[in-house]
Amino acid sequence: MFEMHRQIDPRLCFLGTSAPRPRRGSGLSFGQRVKKMERMLLWLPVLAGFLGIVSLAGLPEARIRAHPSHPSPGAEVELICEVSGGHGPWEFLWEKEDVLQRSMDSVFFIPSFGKNDTGTYTCTATSPTGRVIAEYHLETTNLKWLAFIFPRKSKDSAVLVNMELDEPLRNFSVCLRYFTEQIKSYALFSYATRGQDNDILLYKNRLQNYRLYVGGEFVSFSAQGKESTSQGWIHVCASWESSTGIAELWVNGMPLPRKALQADYAVSPEAAVVLGQEQDSYGGRYNASQAFVGEVTDVYMWDFRLAPDEVRSISGGWDIRSPALLDWRNFPYEMIGHVFLKPRLS
Ligand SMILES: *[C@@H]1O[C@H](CO)[C@@H](O)[C@H](O)[C@H]1NC(C)=O
Ligand SMILES: *[C@@H]1O[C@H](CO)[C@@H](O)[C@H](O)[C@H]1NC(C)=O
Ligand SMILES: *[C@@H]1O[C@H](CO)[C@@H](O)[C@H](O)[C@H]1NC(C)=O
Image 1: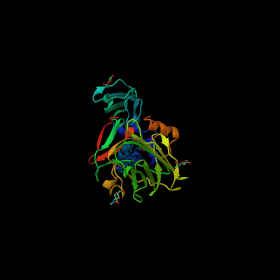
Image 2: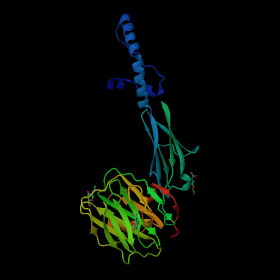
Image 3: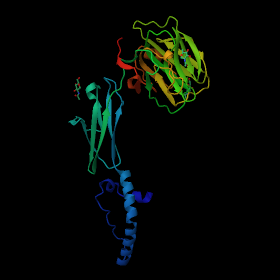
Image 4: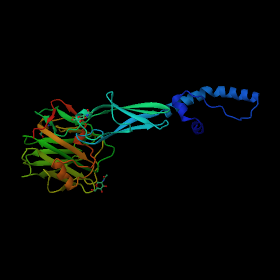
C-alpha cells in the first residue's frame, strides 16, 4: 500500500482529471500486454477504490487560526491561513464579509483589535493546481469591566463555568473580585467532582472569615481589617500546593498567615465549576442559604501557585502573562436563572 501511494502523483488525486502516463520501454509482446491489461482491468475497481481513499486523504485543506483566539480590545491579532496537502506555491486573498482586505499574505494582521474587527473572515488560497477556501468567525468574549450580577437569593440561579482539564490538579490558584452586602454563609467559587462535592470550595463563612476546602477538608482564614476598599469590591486569591498541602489566602493583595491541608492529595480534573451557588453534589443540590447575592468579576484559575508579584498584579487589576485555566478575558460561561452580565459600576 505504501509503495503504491508513493507512485501516485498527488496532484492527480485532487484534480482527478489527468490520466496516468504510459510507461515507456516495457518490452512486452502484444499477447503479454493484453494479458497484463486483463489483469489490470481486474484490479481496476480495487485501484479506483484506493484512488478514492487517496484523493480524500490528499485533498488540500485550508484553515484559519487566530492568535489570540478571543482578543481583547486593542490587542494585536494575527489570522493565519494554513494549507495542508496539495502543491504550492499558494497565493492568498483575504475577505471579510465580502469586502476585500489588504493582505495578500498567508497572515492577516490586525494591529489594534476593535469592535468592527469581529466577524467572518475568508481566506482563499490559490495555486496552479487548485483553490481552497477557509472561513473564520473572529469574536471576543472578553468580560473585562463586566460583572455577573446575582441580584437575589435563589436556589437555582448560577453561572456554570465550562472548564476542561486533562490532568489532576496538584497545584492551583483561584482569584476573583466580589461586591456584596451579604454577611455570611456563601460560596464564592465551587468546584465539585463526582467523588467530592467540595473538591475545591472558596467559602465565606462569616464577616471577614473565609474557608478554603480541598478534597472535602477546610482551613479557615481571618481577614480582619483587610476587607475594606474604596470601591467596595473585595479581591481574593486562594492557592494550594499538594506537595506540602500549604494553602494561601490573599485579600486585596495582602497575604494572610498560611495554613496547610490535604498534603499529597490530587484534585480530580472532571469537575462542575459554579459561581453563585454551593454544590452539594456534582453539578447540583444547591442550597439557597449558601447562595451568593452580589456581583462577581475578574475570575481566574491557574494550575500552579501564583507568585506574590502576580497576586499583587492581578489584585490591582493588571493582566498577568501566565496562561490560565480560566481567564476572565476569555471566559467560558453559561448563565442559569436570574443572573445578569453588566458593565461594572465601579
Ligand atoms: C474600525 O474602526 C476604526 C476606527 O474606530 C477604523 O480606523 C478602522 O478602519 C475600522 N476597520 C474596519 C475594518 O472597518
Ligand atoms: C506543584 O508545585 C510544586 C512546587 O510548588 C512543584 O514542585 C510541582 O512540580 C508542581 N506540580 C505540578 C503537577 O505542576
Ligand atoms: C443549607 O445551608 C445552611 C447554611 O449553611 C445549613 O444550615 C443547612 O443545613 C443547609 N441545608 C441543606 C439541606 O444542606
